[in-house]
Length: 471
Image (cartoon, rainbow, N blue to C red; front, side, top):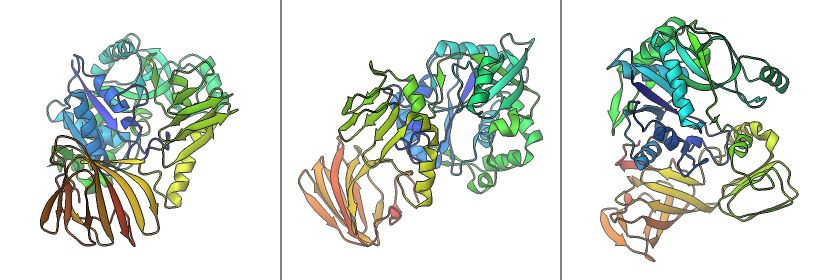
């Protein structure tokens, strides 16, 4: 039986802030190799034995997803867009319904897009171990053999081995993230494993159990999927129906209540990379136990994770610290407080800041921009437009713009007039002018944009035409 990988690409970009943001969560980051975590997940299923992956993601990330998939040259079955995040139980339901259009008993392998699995052979062996139980109607999860008393993971306690599948065990109960004392007790006991959040089951099994245990979720997902529409190659869920769906994980909604839960314990070099301390733990270190990336001068510094993208960072006398500089933000925290970074993000949100939302370099379907400076009534950006790409035809009601080409060739439309600008040439876009910036060449276009006006927010864009069907 061939298996359909279902890759869930959600996330709030909280736990690895400031590197990850809501608009650019950690699955899009290159943390363990030259590929992003999403790309590593896709590559995991590029060998034989698997059907084309089905990807579910937030609609705000659709163009980043497309760009990263295309760069791997790996085909996917489809990309389903959720405007509203409703956690893993509804996402799994939508995936099961999508697969059921061709085969109600399609075998689903549900997994996050942002986990590390270092041992592919052990992963595939665990899937083969779980398969007979999943074929027989069990919902199988994968329990990670614990290596330390971890308080950041949930745990699974298994009981007897299933007679139909050697190495696969019935689940006795799921345990929430424990305190250190309880985590240590579970490490010393038998039958406890970390909850990986990876599942194998038939689409029909999941939908039957979901309908029985969570009828409101089933009903909302069924209505939302029934009214899907095609949008530039994406499959977009009905927003009104999906928004009414309860927000709940597959663990709470189904796995903790069903009598069909099973687990395969496995040691496959797994990590959810859920904190800076976890990333430090799985990274290569120097002789002082440091993980240093970028222009770093570390004197008398041990056991620390230091990463910089823009500035030279110098440290003296640090012990077990995290220092991350992304240009627009700097994080400094003890490694053992890495799980608390969410409090910073929550405070940024309460105070109306944007550093938790957008990375220093903001990706767009046409390229990217990076804010270089800003103040009262002005903002300076560096902009890159991809080859053969163009921005929307738009106007601004509160700001004017000056464009200076650094390299490449810009195709500029402004109030009915078209001009071409080369390096060291510039133009002015008045307030209210209908304008468009494009790159008709085969090389990237780089320019500096200076905005001036009484309001400079990104929502001061009235799109008149758009190649990417954005509102």
